Amino acid sequence: MTQAIPESMTLGQLCRQVGLARSSVLHYEALQLLAPSGRTAAGYRRYGAAELARLRTIRRLRDAGLTLADIRALLLPPGDSAASRPVALLEKRLLELCQEAARLHAQQRLLARLLATPEFRDRRQSFDKAAWVALLRRAGFDEAAMDLWHGEFERENPADHAAFLKSLGLEEGAIDAIRQRAQARG
Image (cartoon, rainbow, N blue to C red; front, side, top):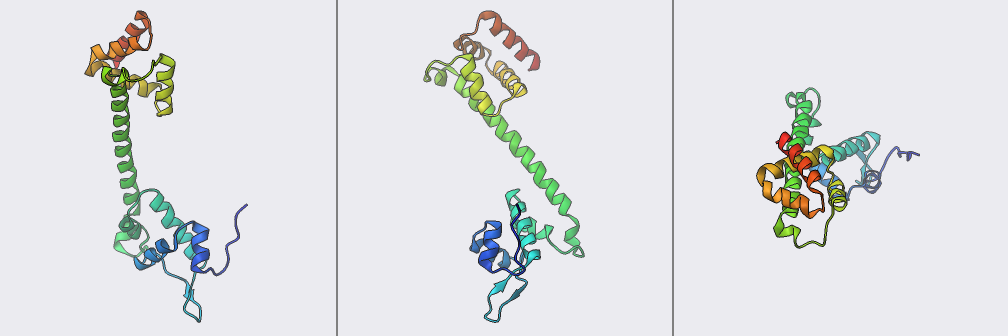
């Protein structure tokens, strides 16, 4: 059930509607990202549905990782020359996230390889294939990511890769099959 939006809200009510701190909303006002719809006779800020919608948009854009400068450019009035680039700003952020995700996935694979090396593998309690696969699954690895991991490990250090597979308690035939598949992908 959606919450009814008051016709006119105080700063505190607006903050509660969006789940932001008062200081954040005032900061957005200082940056001219948001302005109250009016003031009471005593000078208190009042906000309406339009300001609530704008603040929710600002919040979504911040949650998507956009900078306040980019948000300002996105929210410029349509007649402003810089306002023609909102799609480009969103596309830029999307591509940045893709690059960041690729970097993080590479770090994941490296950490998994480090865990599989003798230096760290020997410090763990026994680890069988099921426990290793469960760990990788919890880390977000799917079959393709595991194949990529094996391929990189095999290419980087075939002897350690073979020793790791043996440490999982795999039979020679299974080890050979995994290594052959890894070499084919590498």
